[in-house]
Image: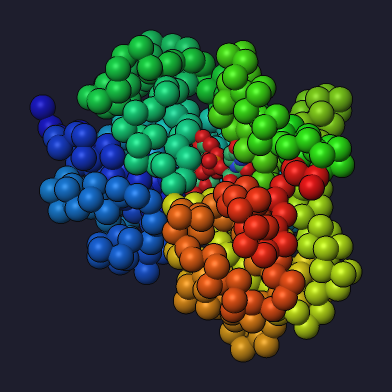
Length: 459
Ligand code: UDX
Ligand code: UDX
């Protein structure tokens, strides 16, 4: 039998790590990752990968050149493949009907049209990107209506559940792999073929198969539930600040109830990342579209609570710094949306920094994995903006600062990693710390002489 060939369109945070893992686990499958962005493809061929994930480089190095290839030849990649993953981005629409909520499917549609045009043999087309329910049907229609005679397509939904920062472990030991397919003999066969790829390293009982719509909707629902937990604990954090309760203690206490469970109860400056907000807005749009305004309204609150949590953090800084940050230097520690990633999409840090800049603060920003150019771009300022400087380390950022705001929970900001006493000496007095991730010991810092605040504590 010929070697099975997989092509993945989109060499981003999802496509790159997922294909690296498949190729590592299946040396007998040829995996080609294609992307229209030549610079990105170029970078995937070096040791300075465009995506930072612990363990990713080692995995890529094991398979690259053996059965893992990166290329800009999208058409050729499609033509040669048996299974094609669509892993392009699906941003929130910024124009026309559904602007601000619906997913923009133009890249996905473009992929489908290209697949239809260039395919010369039967293909299994896999939706890896998160898509609105019933997108598979549209893809199938495009494929069937513009492909040459005799070429047959099966469309599957196989959403990705990896979280950035832990992507390689999540891919190695997934809680489940979900595959949705058409309910027909051909659909079952396609599902079986994809399942057999994952079965090389994922136990069979962790591979769930459903109809296509359930699979598409499960991805949106999983993200909505996860985000909802964060918004729920963040809502309680506001009440903790008002009453003197401590949100981490509350989270610990409720998390011990096995029906609730301990995960995703960390109160913070609000969730970021490319998925949660986008997917919830997408869910809201779908509910509105199907005439379910109450359901839409219910889920929309999750995003509104997140916005509120970000605003509250900024307000707390302003209130505490005597109602003005104008011309004050504030050290910003962390810019990525969570630790162990270089991804800044929808990071709460962007919102918080922009609000502080509007208040005329001077920001000195440090993130171990995010480069200066990316920070300037996200903040919409030029590199010569007098209000923003990029620091090489946390101490440089804090020198002469009035306050430190911890916005990402990088390990290097923890008490055991830094000499907080000498930091204090280098800062303006009173020296404030606003811990937006509750990673430092507030009481110990106060004893040292800091004015320390965390999320969800009243004192
Ligand atoms: C992911 C998921 O796939 C998506 O479901 C989720 O909702 C958002 O994030 P991700 O891998 O994080 O996508 O996106 P990104 O890192 O932006 O990568 C997408 C890649 O697709 C980019 O490298 C882009 O250049 C490429 N692309 C996009 C194409 O090659 N062709 C296109 O037509 C569009
Ligand atoms: C998420 C889902 O977890 C993943 O399954 C899906 O495939 C893509 O979206 P990701 O966005 O990469 O993954 O990271 P995640 O760990 O879910 O964190 C998202 C945001 O929530 C981050 O900003 C994180 O800091 C925040 N968060 C997470 C909290 O504020 N508190 C928590 O308890 C957990």
